[in-house]
Image (cartoon, rainbow, N blue to C red; front, side, top):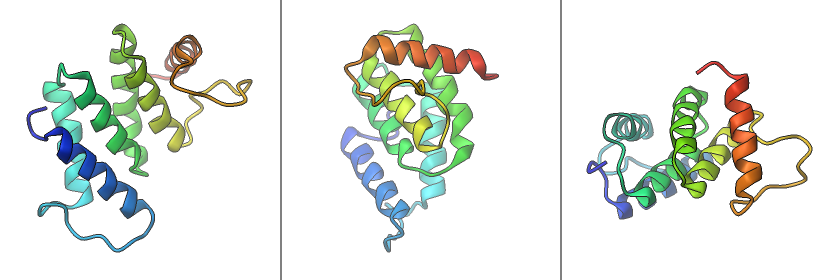
Length: 133
């Protein structure tokens, strides 16, 4: 993901957040929100960084977009992250799916947190098993 630095990923997240709040936002470094989204998705799909923090930042930024077209990508990345051991990345993708009103968290849970790793893995696995990837 050499396309973006970690600082730029933070800036993109803020840009997406502000756009979702209907605040007046201009282009980010000459790119529209849709272009940034596509660039991030392509970077994650084509050359996912080994740096877990960079992946998590990209997932976090994309989770700020209210675009249901991201659901297949979130599902794919969640499946990949479940094979690894990055509980934070798993949780960030779950939040992204939840923001898009996907039933990622078990309804019996009264809340959720990143440190609830076993519950998050259980819910993510259940969710993926119920969807077509």
